Image (cartoon, rainbow, N blue to C red):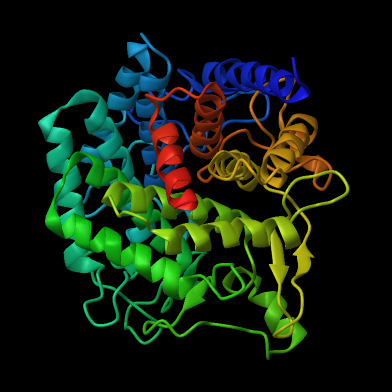
Length: 452
């Protein structure tokens, strides 16, 4: 047996064990809040539930999505479908604003007002996008018409409050009554992300793309299709730069926000608004391929070419050549120069998305050995520095750069099972070459595009 086949067989088993024993069995049903509904947010490094348990629409929705997908991935496990359904009443009765529509970004454990992170009663396009993502995935598993109706109502809310008919794309920030606000508005946010107010951004855009892709699978509505294709083209042709990375923030008319000409102090203060986020780049490459495939666009060589360019850019500039893994942040200080690493940490979600992207492109371009070689190195990095072999799940950051995460939270409002679950389910299916799996249908399609 060739070394390649031995690697595939071994990794296939390792990934299945990590998904089921390392992640799923630790999280579920521990995370289920039987008293107030929904899912617990905060879990300590040794799987204890602290008192503070605010609930954010993003992580609540991500649990519903992951559990919905697990119920299909693990045959005969109806428990996961029931756990996914468990999250819906909390969304419907506590997180949905009955008066003005849309989902609050944050609520208390009980479902009431919370001032955590300063969000108070504000709403975000990003959070509402994940709710669509979750509801569409759950409907696909249950065929419950009330779930689809809920997703449709939410899509219409986003359409009427968030969509920009002048410059296209979507506004991110809303008051409780659904009014977009910016720095000139009478309303002033005190939220932790208020420095992003007034800008459009790649992150809400790519996750709206992701959500509309999931929704279009179950609801072939013409407007959903129009908005999905528009988002794909906007991200591919405007948000992705010529070098092959995502510009993070923009003015409302899609002029890019850059601090390249600013002082070092100003540039570092605004790191979150302007840097190269390698993890988002190759995650977006995957999401663009999914969106184009869902739309049924034939011979979409442009999307494939740019998606490949995004992963290649991350491999060239974001990869740690010493121990593996992708760095969190880079920067182009001068046009025409190389990208410089300015944040050497390696967060868990970007490493998970790296596994998914590298293996996907190794299947689409089997003649290029780099992708599978990097995938093997990436899995070694994850096993060595991210997987908690003692207590289960993944550390928040690679221990080679952030050893303090050995005792960091296993879960908080931004960290749950979505990135790791999706990556491991996809990689397991890709290694298995099961033609019935959606990810492998995606591969066949894009391999045909690449070869024609």
